[in-house]
Amino acid sequence: MNIDWGRFIDVMIIGEWLVFLQALFSFWDGFFSATQMSRKGHHGYSFLQHGGMWCDVIIITPLVAYLVGKYQFAYLSPLSITIAIVALVVWTALAVFVFTPAGKIMPEAHTHDGYVTEAGWILVVYATLASWVIVMWYVSGLETPPISENDVAIVSFVLIPWAILSVIKISPIWKLNYCSTTQTAVKIIGIAVLAWWRLW
Image (cartoon, rainbow, N blue to C red; front, side, top):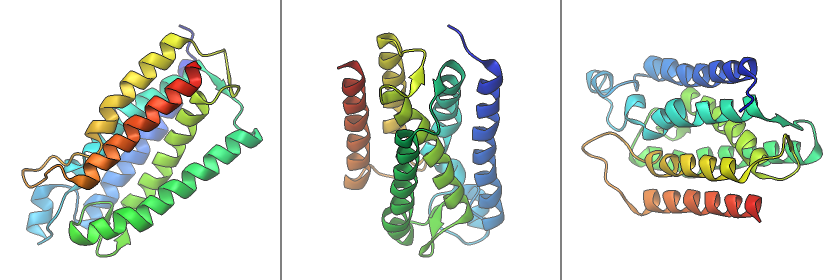
């Protein structure tokens, strides 16, 4: 397994730095921990209770670093740029039209009081970059060396826990609902479709 450890480390630093910035802005906003939120009179879910954040730290950042370290992508190709733009549009739309209304009902670190917080916009940047690399990897012809079937299976398998755990809030008041179930199902179906596309 040939990995450019320089690229791997660079991506790890950038990814974890973006998560750290979310933590920092959440702290300044009073939404870092349940204790801080209680002290400031906020209700909802804190940054530390966000299952997706822990997935980003433990699963997504190392996975993206592995892909960038092992493969060279045609970052400036028309298809690659299109993927990046679509990822940005999708994550921005989700933040504004899905997560913001949800944040009015149950505030959290990334969206509350009817707007996307600074931590939320940093998450949009993080999610856009991670999605860009992962989708590029699944789309044939944008990487060298050629992707093995084993790598497709391993990466897809690693993404399944992310699809499930990323919707969870580590809180006794959180309950699995229709929205969370739908998000999880859509993610798993998306992973399966991309894996099928890659292996076909």
